[in-house]
Image (tube, rainbow, N blue to C red; front, side, top):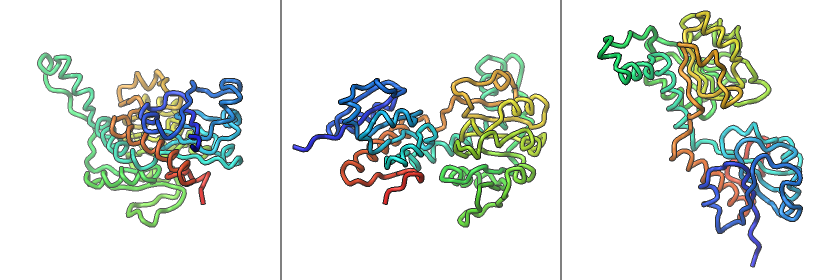
Length: 319
């Protein structure tokens, strides 16, 4: 009888991954981070696959000499050292597409909540202020007549754009290269797009090129009616510059689902009355997280059965 491949589950990966793998592989678990000596030499030498969410660096990879595949729970895989993996011929996979709709829906909800202040309006009602003090104040901002620029137009960005079409807003985008399949106005520079729009939705991954690209200059270009929405990575926004811009009225409001040092949220953003803040919940529904878990498991199972993962990341292509 052929020996079952051993898969290491590192940290708090959704339990559905283990449930899906059980019976087809032999599961080993350990708390994150994986460090030298954490596993016995015999166990470490037998691990062929890893399921992980969050960080899995070169040191962790080096602990597992027979490792073949790292299945990342999430679309973003910046916590995995893909260069170290690629150098050793190790495949890295992620979970694209299955969360596109959920994140796009959240982006639109966050945009509406930020502009129309619906969470504050609900609090007004629940606190009895409607009855005591009268109607909630009129919202100063509206989605009507806005020009929305998407910073990033990948799978999720396209879904956000398609939803925005129904609101009758003008849609633009900035990416490294123009997309031939996108019927929206293209801007070759981020600052150029910021100058042309009054609303920016950021949905770019965490890469060296995107670090704090939404800075004081870009925020100033959005203008005093400007609104910033971020459902990508907190890494992309200079949070100090954003707090200053919100306080000074350089822009009107911001809606954020992501932060640079999660779960820490800067006090200046928490205190700002013109922010709508969410605890990184864009894909946080049971249905979507289950679909992500299934794709993690299916990538591992497909690799061990056929040598072909379903969704390898671009840095580690499989022929």
